[in-house]
Image 1 (tube, rainbow, N blue to C red):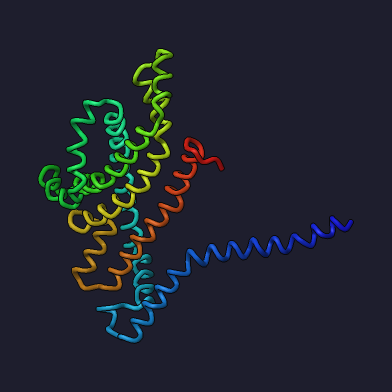
Image 2 (cartoon, rainbow, N blue to C red):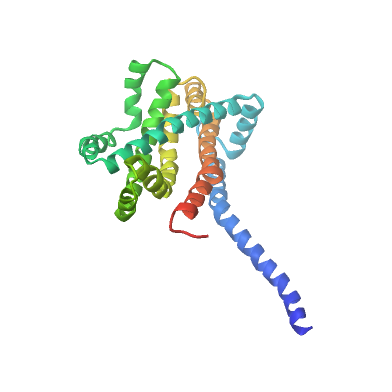
Length: 274
């Protein structure tokens, strides 16, 4: 009876400790943003430059509400997300395929790696004029610019994954009569999946920034276009709404999709066992 009573008495303490840990995690995640907004509010109140120079959080919130009610913000976000999907669909398969080729064929590595290293030094936005001339003033040019930036983190992370797969596993498949395609399919690709997932997560950040930049200059619609259009008419609160939306969308995609995908991939195919 005493043991049972002790267990019952300990349950509220455990629940309280669990609640404190959860509250602490939420505070560490949200607290810095609360402090940032508070500092922003104080600066706008003390300096009082007006909404045309430094809008207050209330000004931005009111503008965000107007943009949502008018459908402008939702339409821009959906367009940017659609372009991001096309960007990933182009960049991820290309990055994985070229990394597998470079990692398994010495001639491909000797031919491609110097060029690939050189191309990483050229920012994606510098390619936008080239794409506009070659592909036209259209969606393809915008997506190609973002895909260029998305591509390289996927490529190099996948290559690291391929190079870390033990050679003994490749030789084992070969010894059993497996073809080169089977080595790639059954050994290299599964062994590289954690690195691929990390590359996709990293590439998303690069691709998202390049996409917004390309939208500012060459797109009809999208968050970048919304921000640039607001700047052209001096609507500073809407500019800030666009900037906040860029960060919020990126955080949501990372937290709801990319981070869980990476963790699941590492648990299934990597060295972590949860």
